[in-house]
Figure 1 (cartoon, rainbow, N blue to C red):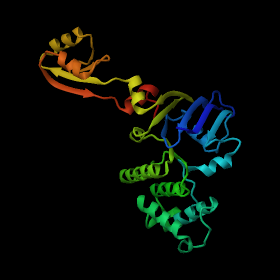
Figure 2 (figure 1 turned 180 degrees about the vertical axis):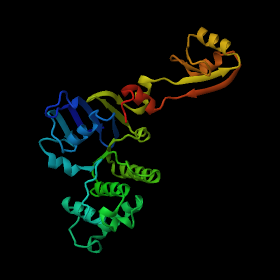
Figure 3 (figure 1 turned 90 degrees about the vertical axis):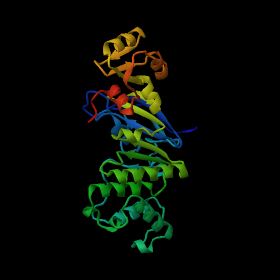
Figure 4 (figure 1 turned 60 degrees about the horizontal axis):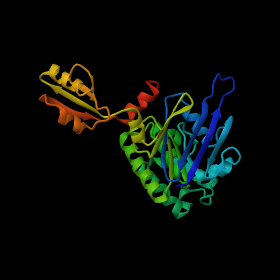
Length: 312
């Protein structure tokens, strides 16, 4: 698969800073991929995505989006991407639909008309479809300043999808949304990706959203500390463990230690499988068990193991 994003040796140092905010970051994103950037606050996520979306210039390094250099041809990059920023950028004095209409005019998607009813049929249908998905059928025609923070976030999402970008940057897109709206949004984004082969580049603090990513890049202190599929990241750091207990705990502990297994706790015991399968270990245990279950590491387990407890 071809790469739609190529980042090489990216460095950003802010004026008077003692160290780089982004320090030699490199990664690729394949066309049509769901790629997630993770990291605690201050890790360099926002700086990185700001450079990729041309709102910030790097100190050094190169960024190519669809073959276009983000520094040399920012306008060319912007035509290919959609951006949903963490902080709203809506005109509060316009209605939600007027914000979207202005965006469509800037991207030359539809000729401008002074009223929604006078806009092209394709524009009206697209706006109504997106508004229905995110539950904004009525609110989209209200002044933005009267809407809640969650509704403003939904408007940002609708606006970012209007020109059907080949790469969609999502910076904390579901922050402020209720659970139902988050689910509806991701259902829609999956459909957009399937139909249009849209590349999705996500930053999020909801690790369950990252679980569905094709690949994840974890930043810490401006550097890449892990890169791979969710399964690879979990496997590199953590192993599946076995939770067991017995009426005779002393006998069970001796038996597990005789099998050269690492045992933690006073009971129930957490058993590190040391590369063996859970089935093999279970078959080797002769002590009658009162508790038996496996524990598979989550992405959150791996993430916290990589960056500690720095995430807020």
